[in-house]
Every structure is written in C-alpha cells, then in structure tokens.
Image (cartoon, rainbow over all chains, first blue to last red; front, side, top):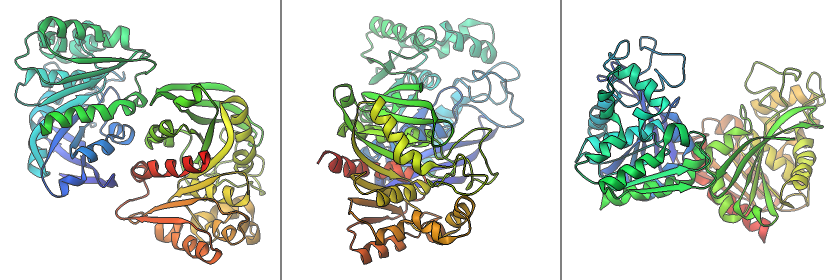
Length: 276
Length: 276
C-alpha cells in the first residue's frame, strides 16, 4: 500500500492511497481524510461512494466535506467506483464497466473476475482502514447517484455493520430504471431475481434494523424522473415503517454544487450516529 | 452573451457565461456566483483570479467559496486566465500562452493581439458585470499564485477601484522569479523596466492608497522558495508602511485544499471592506 497524495486540509490531512485489492484483483486508489482529532485518537469512519464516471478524486476535490469532518472528528474514506486497468473489462459507454461498478459482485463474463465492488466496500476496504489508520470500527455510509444506491444497499443488507446511512440523489430502484437494468443485465445476467438483492426499494421491505436514513434529492435533477425515482423509496419506507428523512430541494440539480450545499447536514447526521 | 451553465448552490446560483471579449478579441467564459441576497438587491463583487493552467472552472468547483459568499451577500466573478481559441497564440509549456495570461497587456508578437488580460479584468469585465447582473460598483479582488500576482497588481495600480485585496500563495515579485521572467520576456519584451509596472513588490513602494491586504502562504508549498518568495512582499510592505496581514500556514501546499481551508477568512475580509 502506497500513499500517492497528501495535502493539509482544514487542520487534518487529505490523503490518497494506492493498493492491490484482493477482491478486485487489480490496483486501485482510495482517498482518506484524517481530521485533526485523528492525530490523537481513533475516529469513526464515513464511507462515501461516488457516482457514474467518478473515481476517488471527485468527492475530495468538490464536496468540501473535510471542513465538517474536521469539526466532528470523522474520517472520510472515498474509494474508486470500479476496478481499473488495462486488464480489466471495460465498455465505451459511461454507464458500464470502469467508472460504473454499481457496487455489486458481478457473476457474468467478462465482468466477474474483477467487478466485486460489493465485497471490496463491505469487507476488504474497512479491514484495511481499521488496520492501517487511526479508525474505530464505527462506520457510516453515504453516496451520490450510483453511489447513493451503493450506500443504501450496503447498509440495508448488512445489519450491525453501519450506524447510519444517507444519500444524495440515489438510484433507489435499479431493477426498474434504465441505468440499473443495463448494468445489472451485464453484471448479474438475465435472471431478474438476482437483481433484487441489490435494489434498495426491495431491501427496505425486509430490513432487519432501522438505521438513521437521510436522503436529499434536487428537484431540478434531470435524472429524477427516469433514473432516480425517489418516490419509490418514499413509498417503500412508508410501507415498511422505516423512519427515513427524504427531502426534496427546490432548484438543485445532480451536480456537486448540490452535494456541497447540503453535505454539512449529512456529516452532522452521521456524526450524531457515530458518536452517540 | 450566453449563459452556458446554471446550478443552484447554497441558496444562490452558480452560473457560467460566454461572451465575445473586445479586449481579448476572442470568445471567453467567466463564472459568476449570485448569492441569495442578489435576488432582492444589488450586491458587491469579489473578482477571483486563478493560477497557471486554470480556467473559470477551478475556483467554482473546488474552493467552496459560495458558502461564504452566500452568508455575506457577495457576488463572486471568476474569469478565465487568458484568451482562448485556435486563432490565439499559444505555447506547449504550461506557464506560457493559453492558461497563463499573467494579467498583463502584452506588447510583443505573437501575443499582443489577444493577451490583454489586464484591461479585461480592470475595465471590460466589471463594466459587463455591473451592467448585466445585480452588482454594485463596490469591488474587491483576490487570486491564487499567478492570480494572486494579478490581484495585487490590479489593486495596487488602480487606486479607488477596489475596496480590498487578498491572495493565496501569490507570485509577489514576477520580475525576480523564473515564472515571471519567462512570461514577462515573452509578453513584454526584454526591457525589464516595463516589467516593473506589473510587479507587486515594486508597486507597493509607490502605492497611493492602502487597502486592506490579506495574504496566506502555505509553508509546504513547493513553489515558495523559487517562484513565490513571500518574504519579498513582507519586506516591501514593511518598508512602505503598508499594513498587510501576511500569514504562513504550517503544512499547507499550493493546492485547492489550502485555498478551501482558508477561503472563509478571505471572504470575510472582503465582505467587511465591501459592506463597511
């Protein structure tokens, strides 16, 4: 494991590390923000999952989450969104292959050998973080768009693993929308029953624990109607009696300007659960 | 003039506009952040000048200044760093030509026809902003690296035009450092006397007004010793009795992580002068 970037930031350190991942069978980067408090004690960790086309850089350069992580003493880990490299299967489209791992374990060729982002995020990365950084095992998870889908699915499928979950403009029902249908057909195959294992709206109905859940969705988001369909999550939470806070923000689009505007409240949401 | 981007951001709007500049004789972009207060009244304007290789995007996507501009009711205008286009002279180096205008009016070929960033920033852009946006004529100016040089020079050469000035890691003495020597030789020619018109350390000595001046410089900045040489500005201010606040920040480098960490204090510095 090698550190490839290190920048002072809000009194702490924004770092980027590169390592050979077992789950992904390739070399990948992840970013880690160490708040000032981490110089003196172990801190809880928020995992941030990015959206389509992103890598570990987008969140750390654009969201300004470090300010609030510094205030609350929370480490933020931002992984890449897929395996990478010349030997890793890819596709010319922006919504399949490298940059578009969808946080699943692929079962189909040519994706199965490397596309195991679900295992990477759930097991390998936290083990690495808790071994090599001043991190406790108190974990929270959040993400944007495809990463919002990932955060919801990881949290809902793994009771006891996270203390809180949130999302910006998540894909809430990948089985029912074009982005998800395309990716799941490729990674998981034609049997749609296997897709339901990675579909937040389905998983909400059978959730074994109720985590603090916060979702922000912009009303000027071009993807809202066709790809994100936040209403399906509202309905599912309502039916399941899952006490989610789902907010619609007038005028906001799908960009990092939206995330930057509300990340303070998401960090506070997670800090309360992590330190409570 | 055409609006090419518009995003809700901290209750206001982050916009990018494209126009045909007379000074630059080409089409260029500029970014403008309109705080919530601008929906109801005219607001003062902070001009932000970016550094080498940047365009109008870097500051608006990475610094998170919008949060503080929203709080203080300040418009932020972030222009490009040079003229652009296939018809505009260029150089393969990152520190000359497009992306490296150095905020001067070039007198030498092939640069003279388009490289007139000094006039653009001083006259054309503010006139445009004050005509087309809810902006008062209260102006402040700031910038990073090459843009810090630009901000200092614009403020020092134009008494009455700005109410305050600040800079992150500015090139304070371009006539004495490699970046400046290369650019000034190309744009202004071999007569070094002409360079002194754009050299903050020289201009401080004959400044006709004393503006509130704030400078932050990272101590882990790789360019500090050879290119930035903040100490020369300290000496010049001290000799001239110019009451500058020049701060060195332990551990911080030349990146936007440094700017993001201290931009709140710069916005507050300008807001106090603009609204005082």
